[in-house]
Length: 263
Image (tube, rainbow, N blue to C red; front, side, top):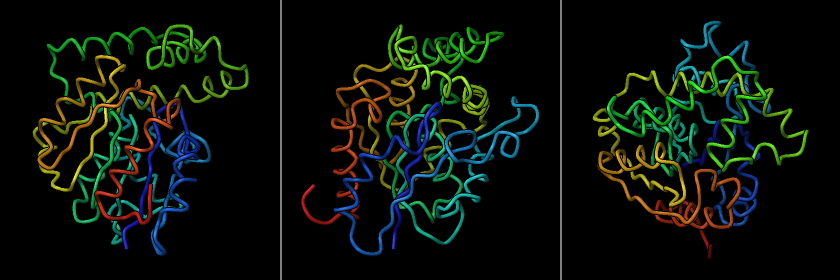
């Protein structure tokens, strides 16, 4: 039986899938489980000290896959079949999982995986994300968190958040910076992703930044069994517009024959 594993974005945690989990609770047939683990440094995930190298520039997506071994989730590389749902950083991690363990991963449902390493040096999209990364250098965690959050949402978004949320995001920002290193330094090429043969539903927001939209376009043109669908939302759609995004995810799961009843 195939399980479903949902991987969240950077600066988030497994709770971003709460509304999807509630919907799936009445749609999944007996024997099909839904998992939403916390990635390294987020929620109840493996701590930064345990999960990443002392030099964060050496952190890679394979380290994230290894840390999932410690979670209550079908382990990457195990005999348990999975369909992976991934948003942003979680989507990039899901692609690595599928590439490295093709016999385990039966399908991918991705919302703007930020696999920035597929962007060519001369592309404007790469220059844009490198500029965001550079602008966070040398700032406090709270200041860099504000830049990160505003880029993926809209200017001033971070400042309007409750103080508790801002404090949590500042605490998590060190992992966000490690995530950027992993996404940019990954050695997998765009052509390598052409080896992923399982069905892929690739969702992208029509209000998203150039960087993530360009990555999505490259992947859509490369993955051999990919259906790319626009969604009227921004990059953070799975969190802030779940009513819009979740129906796409449910439809994709239905197409992969793991749902029952009306959705």
